Amino acid sequence: MEGEQNPKGRSSFSMSNLPDFSNQGYQLVRELGLNRTHGRVTYEAISSRNQQSVAIKQFQFAAGDTRWSDYDTYQREIQVLRGLNHPGIPRYLDSFPTESGFCLVQEYKNASSLAVPRSFSPEEIKQIAVSVLEILVYLQNRIPPVIHRDLKPDNILVDDEINVYLVDFGLASIGTGEVTMSSVAKGTLGFMAPEQLFHRQLTEASDLYGLGATLICLLTGTKSADICNLIDDDYRLNFQHLVPRFSLSWIAWLEKMVQLKVKDRFANAAAALSAVQPVYVVRTPVADLSQVRLDFQAKKLGEKLTQIVEVSNSVPETILQGMWRVVPHENDPVPINSRHSWISFSQVSFQANYFRCRVTVDTRYLQADRFYERDLLLSTNSHPQEQLVKVNLQTATVPLRKKKLPLASLGLLVFCSAIAAWWQAIAWSDLVAESGSMGLFVAVFVSVFVAIFGLTAAVASGAIASLVTHLRTKFKVKYRLLDKVVAFLIAGVVAWFAVRFGASFRTGETTTASLALVDVVLFLAVFQGNKIAQICHQRGFSRSLAIAVSCLSVAWGVTLGLGGQVGWLHPAIATATIAIGLPLVALTIYPPLERARLIANYRSFEARQQLIKP
Image (cartoon, rainbow, N blue to C red):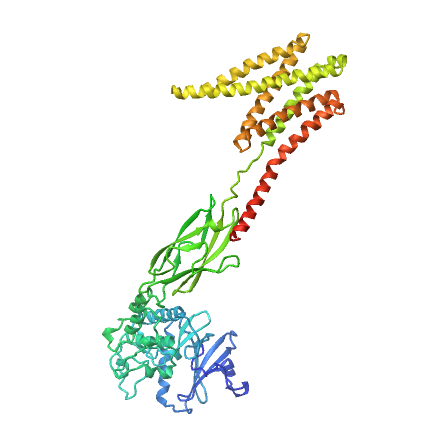
């Protein structure tokens, strides 16, 4: 508690100049404030009983312009404080006489009075008003009510956390019926209600005038001693022209607090508190954005994409004004006539409390398959005055279809073909041993013949299945399974002929049955190879390249399988492995290399067109 402070709030006396109250149980620390006119000095002290900080207010009878009647103020304050228990009122602790006067001991609050120049935000001033009103509600709810009668900046303490304390109850009255008959009004000019100034009956609205005048001083930056500069000839406080930014409802609330007639003010502190709670202090709109990040995903080149940003203001008695612009970026061209090269707004500026802005990005001038980040800036008359909206844009991919061979399926095709050919080579080992190269030629011929039969079966079954689908659709037959059944029947017939053909070259039932199974495996591998060729064609490869990859895969598998039995270093096997493997590898790595080349050409095209970089 620092009532009656000097400007710095520090003692101008050394420790040796401080009075000695050790006999009363207090060790003085420093002087907090001095009122020479009325002979009052306030000290901070330490209680010897509990080592707690206390505030000691000393009344010196022989100092300044004091009168014995002023002693009554101390007696009145003690009388009032003894019955009060509120966190916003420093508690009465003790009192004792001294050689030169009388001392009052209260709870110490590390807070400065509002008379000390400080800076508060409008909302903090409203918080101070609410806190003081809550204290007044407590005082007015007592029976009988307590009227402070000296509400002014000097008697309101506020700490750094905006905790508020009301001090100096020397002029307080218990009950509203007291009328002072002295020729001198008790209170402070400028902060006394007219009924108090003219010795009329006090009411619960009397303290509201002093609080309203205090708040006006804080809002206008007026010192307590200069408040009379705001009073006109009719004794009215004129302050409206000094607070142009504050809301009309806040100004109206303050005007009602300092009305000259009691009936025109709030009836009591509770009514004033209820009225101030929903009031907006600052007459500044608030810009609320529906979203602060816009994510765009283009699916095709040159596409225009649009999103909506809703801007709203919910503060009464205000109109939101705003303007959109794109924050400059090093890669963007200089705007022409304030228009951005690829970001536009449905309306750049607006004046409304609700506004829907369409933000459009034009990807015609941007590079393909790139990620762009830009910032939009909304400047308004709200607080804060500027707000950022992030724009994230992923442009469409390069207009080249991705071609990717089904490498896993091709690998399986090579493996199956190799196993089938290896098994064939085992069965033909005697023929190869007897006939040498001619026997090997016969083995390869039979395997290739079976493979050709398989490919023929695949093509034939596919053609027959397409024909069945066409007929089924034409005659509105719903059984789709019929297409596959017919295709497998055709493939089965061709497979049967292929197996019979291979069996004619073999002797023995066991060998024939075993190799027939091998022929079926090889036949199915080639059949699957045709399916793989169709998949490749669907992925964008030419039909000839797709068939070539499948055929080469089967042929390479057959060669590797035969090499597993005959030996991979055999001249014919080695030559076939290299002759078939090199084209197959070339066809496999060709698609990504070709795509990389086309992308490089497209990037060169973008550079020539001077498209905007990310």
